Amino acid sequence: MVEHLWTPWRYQYISNVDKGEVSCVFCAALQKGDDRDVHIVFRGQSAFVILNRYPYNTGHLMIVPYRHIPLLTDATPEELNELMVLVQHSQQVLGEVYQAQGFNLGMNLGRCAGAGIVDHLHMHVLPRWAGDTNFMTVIGDARVLPEDLAVTFEKLQPLFSDFTLPRP
Ligand SMILES: [Zn+2]
Image (cartoon, rainbow, N blue to C red):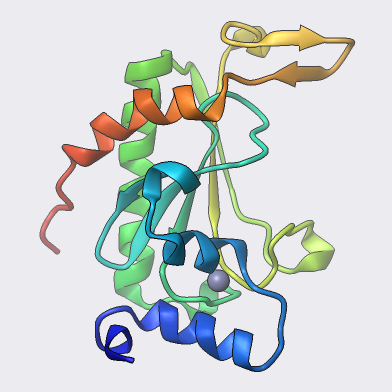
């Protein structure tokens, strides 16, 4: 298919499907074609930004390379650079929109390290607030109910659509 020429991640995704492997949620989201529906707030050169479908906090983002690669050691310098540039912009946006007071950034590499999606590298960007209850409803003792994802998308997406990746 012609798409392979400009969307190498699709080729990877199709290859996985052909091999009968379980499909990847990130590759599937990229393929869907409706970024609002799958909560992709930004598509860059080599990576994209997507809302976590099961957020720990309101504004929980994930920075994901297009390529279906499992480990940081599989990433190119360009991909690594863009991941961090997008983490930086995410921090900016979450500070602006939600007045985040702190952040947790993290990657779980490998199942034994707690990765939920082991085959496709992703960086979590988790905004934090003192007490972490400013924008959430506390249910029971530790459970929190984040803002509806569609609402979060509408708030964050405009600040990403204006964003231009810096020239390397
Ligand atoms: Zn994937």
